[in-house]
Length: 219
Image (cartoon, rainbow, N blue to C red; front, side, top):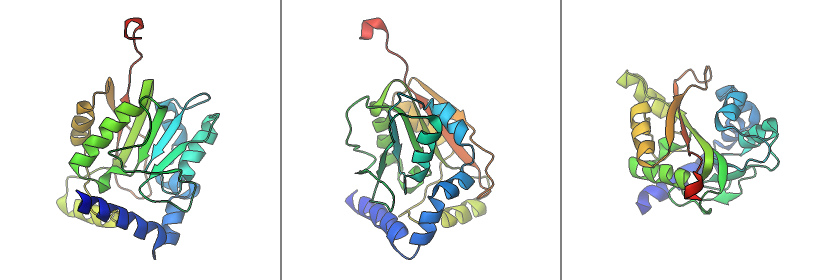
C-alpha cells in the first residue's frame, strides 16, 4: 500500500513540477479544462452549485477549473481544493483520497474530475466512502473519468496517452464505478453525460452520487 501511494504521489509530482510542468499547467488551466470539459454549466446544474453551497474539489490540479465553476455558479465562497501534491495553483489541502481531513457532512457539492484512474479498486472504493461521509444531506457529487472502449488496443493506447501524472492507469466503465459507489451507501447514483467531448475524442463516464434529505425523525 505504501509503495503504491508513494508511486502515485511521485508520478503526480513529476507531472506538475517536472519536464511536463508547462503542459500540466496548460491542461489544468481554466482554458485547458474548458476544452476538455466544455459544459461547465451542466456540471453546475448537476451538483446544484450556487450561493450558500459549500464546494469541494478533489484532484484539482491547479484548482483553476474549480474556481471557474464556483465563480460561474455565484458561490459565496471559493472552493476547497485537494490534491496529492501542492500545485502551481491554489491547492489548499494535500491529502490522500482514502482519508480526507474534513468533518462529516462538510460539503454540499463535490467534484472529482479525471482523478480516479490513477488508483486501484481498494483506494477508489475508500474514496467513494469518503465522498459519502463528507456530503451533507441533500448534497451531490460528480465523479468523472475517461471511460474504456471495446477495443483492447485502443484502451491500451488511451491508458498510455493518459498516463502522465499517474503511477498506474485503470479505466473503469459505468458498471464498475456504479458498483463501487453503490457500496458506499449513497441514496441515489446516476450515469450522467457531460459531453460532447472533442479534446481528446475519448468517451467519458460520469457518476452523479447524491445524499437524500433526512426525515424529521432522523434529526
